[in-house]
Length: 468
Image 1 (cartoon, rainbow, N blue to C red):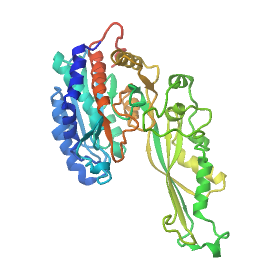
Image 2: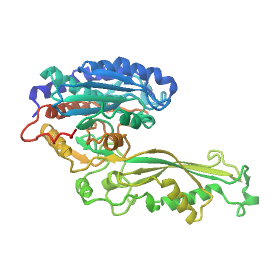
Image 3: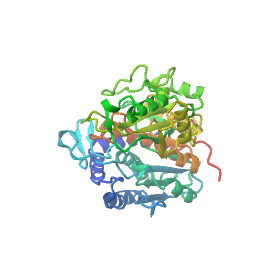
Image 4: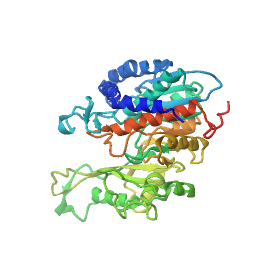
């Protein structure tokens, strides 16, 4: 059990404003990975913020170039206390999405952390700077109190998660021995809701799909040619409806998961979705029939239309357009074979009378998750519930995507994600924010989990070490 004075110290660090001040410095670096001109800020964040933080933990720090041209660098900190101790791999990402300056409410600047009650506004406050700060602070407190961690530590930071983690898989494969560990504990994504401590074991994957109907270079008068010329917008609407109907149900069998296991149904029983104030209300009758909202979000696949367009919808003219295009995204759970998605959709559309629709898979990020019955899952849940005094929600994966497969499939690690955000944090949008209450509880939870790893107890022993 984590010592009471360590809990008080963790809470005081947030209450005193020290955590806020440290996060404000981190947020001030505009580390937008989608903008080439932000590479200077990314490099400065690694050199001026993260490298000193890791050195302060007694880590040797190495920066590695990305094996993919144009990809951002990787930073690895390593602290070895004893080969006989377990090794923990932590992960975080230094980059953020576009700051969207000028679109934040109240004239807020995305690069200035601004407190308003419990909300701390700033780009990266929730995704991911505030979250990796929680873990760095917790590790720092343990080391200061005990003079040791009680385990070996490897901390990996990438700088391109928001643009699909280019080069991360290749880097992990090439440095698998340097990254060799017993378990991954990391923080990203949202909790189940603002009030519920959450542990999730992986992430859904994603496939970005473009559907294009390009029939002719010109537009033609709808009165003179209507009923004679095929309309690409009408064609595209019908093609989409044949893939995912007007109620959100996938109609391409190859895009569905093989099953919803009973063990997954059991763990999701009673899980409430959209349980925080201000969350949108889930729509009745939307999505796969026969499944609960939690099962649809965490245990099933969805095919969403992200963008749809033809001609100029704001200034329409009396003409049949020549071209229409849509962007779709398949979010899928581990166990779904998406290797033939482009071929499957093309064949499905042809069979339904739409051979003129061109299908292109533009981007793919794999799914991955740790088994629900993994011993590390039971250990982490027990450790967190001891200190929180309330049930911890265990989710098979989040609905979104993270590079979890790199750790499960390439490095062969069990993955434990302890998020310090919530679904309403507005990550990737104006007014992104972290909740001070979650930061406060998060430092306690992270410290408790790391303390349990370095100080095994008889009532909650560590799982067996990973074999050499």
